[in-house]
Image (cartoon, rainbow, N blue to C red; front, side):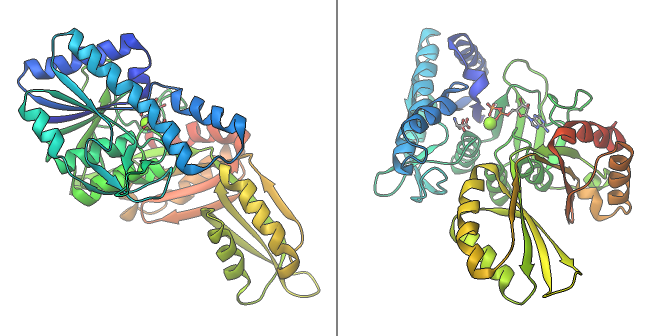
Length: 404
Ligand code: ADP
Ligand code: ASP
Ligand code: MG
């Protein structure tokens, strides 16, 4: 079998863990498998590199950030190759560029455009274990790029598609994908399987177990993959195309995103074109807007609305700067901003065919005394914004109601 195995930061956190990874790869080889290993930076390394750069200036140049961050994974590939050599196993490490991963030029969140796995095949044919640096690639012009935080997942899935691997395993510090983050919800249960769409929603709504772009890629190219532990041999969670019987389960999982901030514009003139101008300016500033709520105020005077929306926390300063500049022009009142929110979501393809799910979620929150600030729904998810201080309690209650 041809296997792609990805090991995340905590699985390569120190040299003992790296030796453990090597011994697992050795087991695969002993069974006769050919293995491509993708590794992340040792846990904490990427965060630390970002911190170092920001000690020098708050918004460092993104090309240089990629140059800096790519070193994290480069350390791990070489150490993993050395660990395999110490077991007498031939292994070669490759950077993203050497592995043939070509991306666009959007530094710090580049997209993979193409993979030419010629070198990988060549080395596999020589009997080598190939170890590829996750999270990085190179533009056609030879610039080093990175694929967004958590991007080693994407490297693994894209490589599995490119080399037509028989198996793609995402090895991490939990036994698989759970009904909720097991660190926040002790009662969470491991799922045997989950559809791409559910995994994609959970990932983009805060479940960091998979990078959401990697799931998007897997769905697009039909890469079936397994999320499993790097520390034991328990079967993990299979992520694959939706099957008919998956709809029998109403809620597959619960997630909590603590990385959003809420902005409220008070007294926005209620006339055509105003929202368009506000969100165009915010979009042009590169700020991603998620939920939007508008309330018509019925007071005397010119009609006005309060407009609230959420943005990614790191984007808040840029959003505020853009709005400050827009304020005199459009003529809204105050700009209120808070980072003390949590976005709690329930996800499941079964919602398509079951009714009353929202009512049950809201009822659970009411009984916990948790106020709902904003709501958004899609065919397979319901999200609410709640006070950050009550978010974890709310998550456990909602999990117990649907999945307990
Ligand atoms: P790696 O370093 O291997 O990429 P991550 O830290 O990125 O690992 O992702 C694994 C973590 O994701 C787990 O430790 C867990 O706390 C968190 N997590 C969040 N939601 C879930 C979930 N639904 N199921 C499993 N793990 C989850
Ligand atoms: N090292 C990168 C990060 O911390 C990529 C990854 O771990 O997947 O985001
Ligand atoms: Mg990760």
